[in-house]
Length: 73
Image 1 (tube, rainbow, N blue to C red):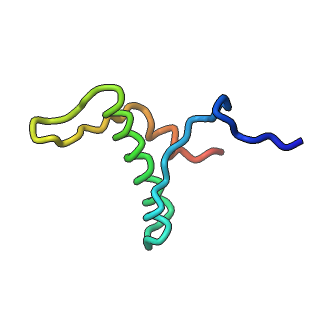
Image 2 (image 1 turned 180 degrees about the vertical axis):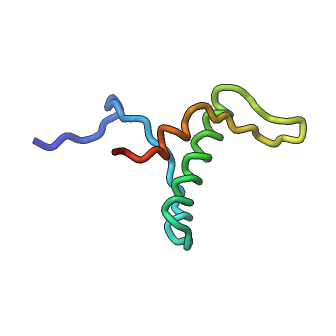
């Protein structure tokens, strides 16, 4: 049976992958790093307004790196 996404559908958490990265000659690791930093920036703005007086954004990085970049055995 086919199920469609409706307004009441529960969607999993996801990260935004900008289209501009598709055409760029970057390694997959660089693209993944961009997506992770973009996601962290969005969360930093959403949870706390972590901006300087000039408007620069601080990105909050907790323990994301070991979980993402550790190779599974």
